[in-house]
Image (cartoon, rainbow, N blue to C red):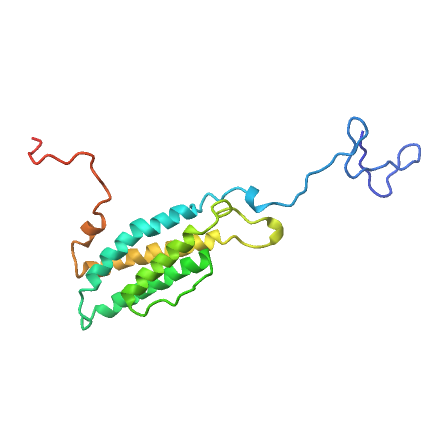
Length: 203
């Protein structure tokens, strides 16, 4: 039986009880403890952070389609239009947000981005998708071991993605002033029917 004692404590017969650090087992053997240090791959995944593959698919699919539709309207607007500078600033902010996603996912930029705004958007989008696809799926989204005293880059990456989504949403009302039917274009293709609708009226 293990006895816990503090300094200066004595028993009835005047002897000092013996304390053991690990305790003793049934046969008098000391218990062994597993190491308390965490490993990154064994930590649980943070539930508020989506997978990197989902982010890459969201960026390369839905957001790319929306950005292309918005840019198609903007490219036909004359530079002399008074609303042109505000939209240009929003698209340049979108480029910076996409670059932020790419930099947080993986700090590598081998090529210089083009100067043309349209080509720059496409370049930044491809760069962000490529870096997201290269993220380690086994460790991404998991909390770093506490003994490292470091923060996982999953949360800053998801915050950068949310910034991209917010800027795309902010572009919609700006483009709507030139193209009232832009919402119909953005939602086109989201729902695909297995069988086409009948041309005859139902009733």
